[in-house]
Amino acid sequence: MNLKDFIRSIPDYPKKGILFRDITTLIKNENAFAETINQIIERSKKYNFTKIAAIESRGFVFASAVSFLLKKPFIMLRKKNKLPADVHSVDFELEYGTATIEVHKDSINKSDKVLIIDDLIATGGTAKAAAKLVEMSEGKVEAFIFVINLFDLNGSNQLKENGYKIENLIEFPGH
Image 1 (cartoon, rainbow, N blue to C red):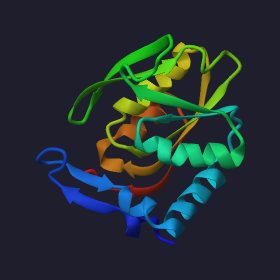
Image 2: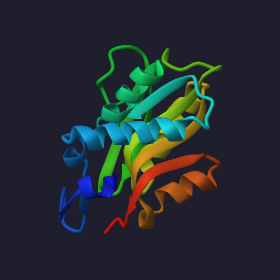
Image 3: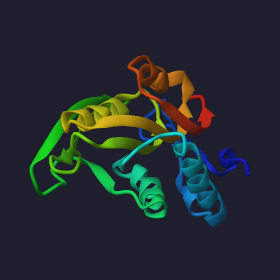
Image 4: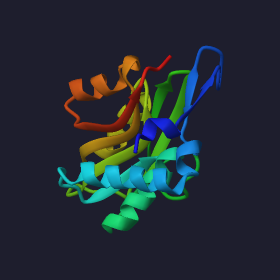
């Protein structure tokens, strides 16, 4: 099954000049969604991790299913002011703005090796912020798995240059 066939491309969203890769067409197809989860699990087998983290919100869709099937704890990396307890926070730049993500301070500890799952990597700002949250919590980023890599926006290369292991299921140009 070619997962690319299930990704809808929407021009000029959320702003002019952005070609948005829409995963809703993938997740609404039960066979494509199941294949995506199976491919993430297969790629995760080469890594030794104790927890799975995902970036709000589309990363939750994939990571929660993988977490359930692998029986690993699931850690939510959420947008600012969405978590009720004490948090670590990281501000970062997006392709089209700025944002903040947070994690509960008691979610990750020194002995944890964390697999971070997200739907897409573009410029890498969100992924680098996620890694920083794990490291602020004294955990180790074991690897990243993305459903989509927008290869010409260079985010995955930046992560690799910083020593992170990267996997992706499919690739598209960013524009």
